[in-house]
Length: 322
Ligand SMILES: C[S@@+](CC[C@H](N)C(=O)[O-])C[C@H]1O[C@@H](n2cnc3c(N)ncnc32)[C@H](O)[C@@H]1O
Image (tube, rainbow, N blue to C red; front, side, top):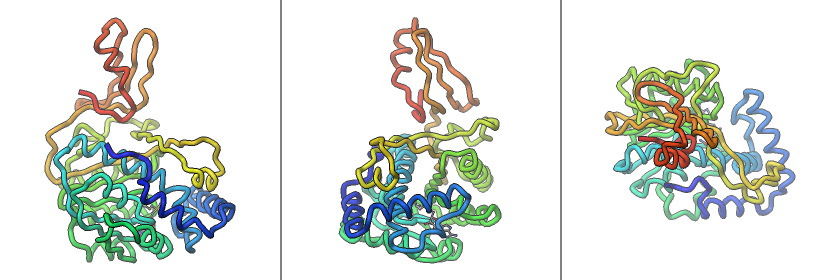
């Protein structure tokens, strides 16, 4: 399992960039960018080197953790997957590329696509000293145009990206990303009802084009969850000093909620059930909400069933269960 915390090389590169920048300035820029996101805006608010750095300090640890957790889930289902090349769509500061590079030693080439010049410049600055990421090519432009020109890749990733484009454009982009996917497409979004809705719409459309679900779902059928319920997961990550300062936070960790889907060209061999919320443990029983190939059900494991109860005590939200 890949750690959800930023790799030391990336942390050091971010710290290096922060030298010479005021942390108070970074904090106020980051607050302004967060407000833009909350108000429904996108990364267009990130225009300067300082904005890009403030965004990366505040958000990169969390989006990195969410992508890593999604990749860990994919690897659990497909332990033999060894992609050689990556297409990172809406790559921003390169977050998903770092996570994928950590997860798959097999990767040799990395293509990143994004419209935002400030984020592109930051991404290239962060990898300057990285031997692992020496074969990066970062194309600037609208995803639709840059994707159309890109070569196909074993792994295509769009992390916290598809929410920044309109509905019609998103459908076209989903199909284009799938066209460019030789093996697996991973899409990660915030773990909100809206993020989940975007994932489910993309999932349905691409299953219609022949895709199979590797994770998180144990089937390729319709999602059995009914609103207001939605499928999402959570990943805890450690906050560095700079991260806490930029966010004005006290706690040494945060929990990032995310939704994701990993779609593959070939059907996967394993379809384990998955835990959809943190199980509730009482002295009498353990109650867990589980998505199985047959649908979502609440499972109760009584304490008197000692072996099963001991097993279920280890269950965590997002885990697969036999
Ligand atoms: C919230 S950021 C996420 C960045 C990165 N993937 C991550 O997980 O940290 C969204 C990114 O998508 C990019 N983006 C949004 N719309 C785009 C488009 N139409 N074409 C290319 N990039 C786009 C933005 O410039 C931004 O870098």
